[in-house]
Image 1: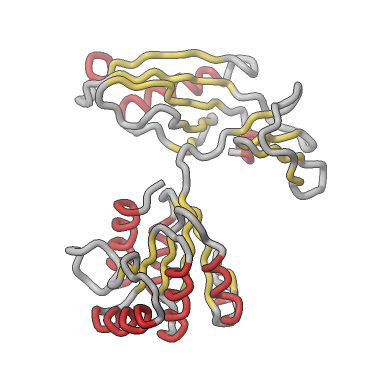
Image 2: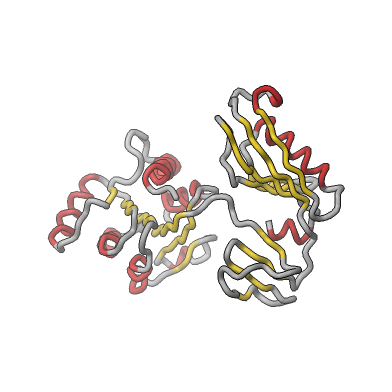
Length: 283
């Protein structure tokens, strides 16, 4: 959205409230320019009409806005049967360099030619500052270890899902893989130890010994979900050793992935993993 505001006349559509059955919940938002859209409020005739109204608003001055109620069945012919109230705003823009951009509770000042600099969290926006909404989805931190065939398939399927992914591998050959952080084996366990609270960990490296060390570090921490790729035999061997070290293995999910989804192809495994994550470790 930042780049759209810097380069295009932009309108923002936000779901203010819903009643009954509706495609998306309150707070969902999307951005509209004369020739593009970013995000979705649920598709269908509701979104089509909203985009149409947003583009009409682009002809109005910055700051123009309107609130519209849509009974989905009577007005739009959608069988959901609910009602949706939308706020459509003409956003200020395009933005020049040097403005202060406010992301949620983070204020970031961009000076011409400089990288963003962090400012005080939670500070009130000042006159002349611009407000940029963050993604409408909260995201769960997720650490993915391994950039092999399954790891790459998992990284692809997680795009667009509510996870903030950190992706790691120890092999220099994978240093140029987009999104992968090369991490030495001596440091990789520290990465796991740093993930606390509600986050998720997926372990699928090329090395069973490294998998074991990562699983041990993960179980010693407080991650909400710990997934380990492998067979039931691998699980039995790992569990035996981990329990001998005094660790509680009840959080260890191995084999990883939603039961009942058959197939060993990387894309199938990745889909099963993503489905399980959404069931067990959603924001």
